[in-house]
Image (cartoon, rainbow, N blue to C red; front, side, top):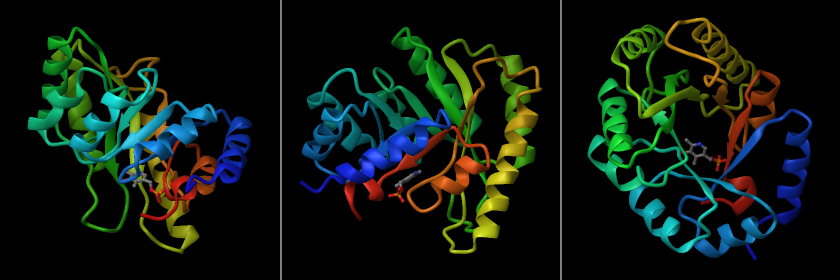
Length: 221
Ligand SMILES: *Cc1c(COP(=O)(O)O)cnc(C)c1O
């Protein structure tokens, strides 16, 4: 069995003291691996690709909470909107509008996180601070009833430089705190999704309350 059960138990134990949600990132991994963690009690799973998520959702237990953590194209929102639990990587106003529209179609309110670009790599997605403030202001005026703004998501630089990564997380936490005081956010804006296999402990120390962990649980991809 390729799932690392001992590592899973260690991580769950570590997170329990800080009230942090674990999203097990199962992209590219077979449904058997997901079932193995499900048997241990894991319910939050994260996927990056729409087709893969749709296929897995249709055959796995219906009480799994699916997080979409990849880059989402507007024309694909419709495939995941009937069931997705939370969409992490929202990085445009257009995408927000489409999620709201699809939420309305399915009579759902869909939880979303806005992605902020905090890393040095240009290839990563997300708003900068100024764009983020613009989107939040716009949202405050839009009355989008079928999305619920739950917080922010970010990915630090892929680097061994702990100070660099720590500063990026700290920066995101400061933006998160600032957002919470804006009229466009309410008490539901309480989720800060940051930290992966290589940096989740650092992320929690800097204020994360949701970590997305793949390779530590399922092995390398
Ligand atoms: C793949 C992925 C993860 C998990 O990465 P690991 O290093 O395997 O833990 C987390 N977040 C996002 C957005 C990802 O694409």
